[in-house]
Image 1 (spheres, rainbow, N blue to C red):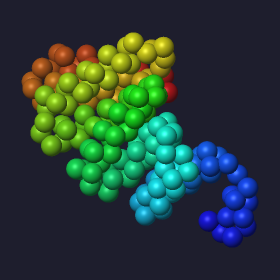
Image 2: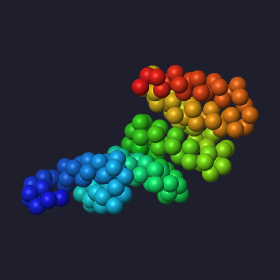
Image 3: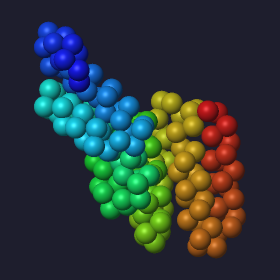
Length: 171
């Protein structure tokens, strides 16, 4: 940060500084600036190490950035971290996004059973969520449909594709 920002930051409480660093980290992640993302993420943890909600957001941002950079193994680890942290604080939206994308990466690696199980887990969570009418399960319906299609279960795949599209239209 610039000198005036640093001087102003000196007057803020550590949790607020952690939130500001989280905003910078999310912005860096959306620009695929992994160096700034890691730097801001470390800053968040130093200001507010117990804030698992912010850490789940940062892990998801880092996972997406690694995913787009085709760093599959590190992305899998980061999505797993985001899923676990978001589960521990009850953040269903990050849990669904991280779980669905994790399942997709397992499918890409040929781990179809692990992928299908992860998609089913996300769908169970989405079904039991208070936001049940949202599009939370759309990604996993489509992902599970792809796995079922790979296994030649065309009827099951079609049903999941249709439900995924129906849910996605709610966005």
